Image 1: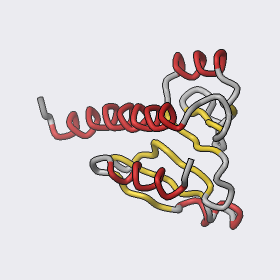
Image 2 (image 1 turned 90 degrees about the vertical axis):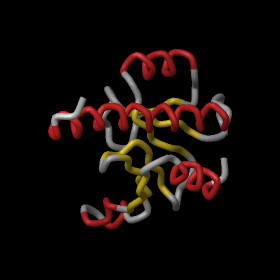
Image 3 (image 1 turned 60 degrees about the horizontal axis):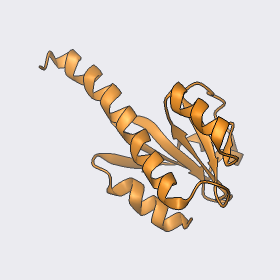
Image 4 (image 1 turned 180 degrees about the horizontal axis):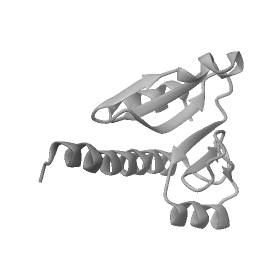
Length: 123
């Protein structure tokens, strides 16, 4: 997995912004690059320790991946119900990681598109 390729892939998705928001909490988090859609995180990784990526997911998908893949770990933010950590270079190929990122993006986009629309009374 190449850090710049992953970054370019994430920002190529419609409406995505990137930030490093966690440095204000602790200096050791200055290097966490976060990708947002509709102002909500869907993917993040450490640019100084590019060995894993954290992704938003569903509880069912997280459970399935944990049971079938060694590359799955506990996410940095410890929200085990909705986030998953994928270690690079193990038993999940890069192509699958890109698919999981796109799925993560879709989860967040769908969830928060509905909320924004309901505030505006859309149909």
